[in-house]
Image 1: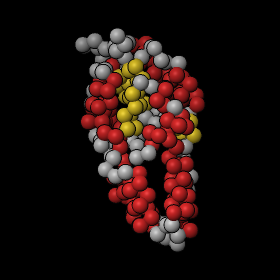
Image 2: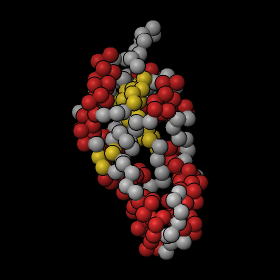
Image 3: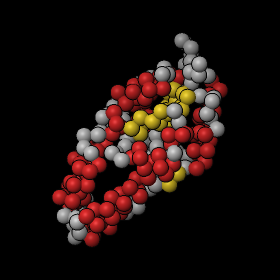
Image 4: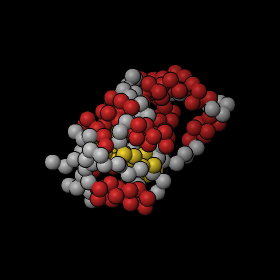
Length: 212
């Protein structure tokens, strides 16, 4: 039985997701003050991230709160998803692909309704890893410790034998507090090196101190 595990975040790790400026462009088009879109839509984005609202309901709220017709709703959401999905981190994805059979592989991602379908279509993450845990499907976002518990349970691994990789420091700290090993993603070289060290160490036994 394979006991070691690597669980990765998506945005900022498996995907490069720099800001595209789409929100500011829409605020200019709609003659809204800077920050108005996020202020008006904050509770909708939040509900979408934990599955309290459907994708159709998101579209309806965008239309109602920003005064958009059907065509502009589609254009607005296309711009949102273009930034959300970013571009693939090909080097890291290829490396993770090569780990199959050496350890269990999973994903834990703060997400939004509609993310699974789009990321599956574009990036085939469902073929890359064994389990994908999305916040909008479990109703819990990182850094809530329950998110890490769900991820480990879905992989049937002990937290101390799992390396979690994220680009957000507070999520890395929360994973460590939940008993996992964790690594802050800054670049591919450092992350690939850390994964290798994790796999070389093998499953932890009582009394062994995990790597930082």
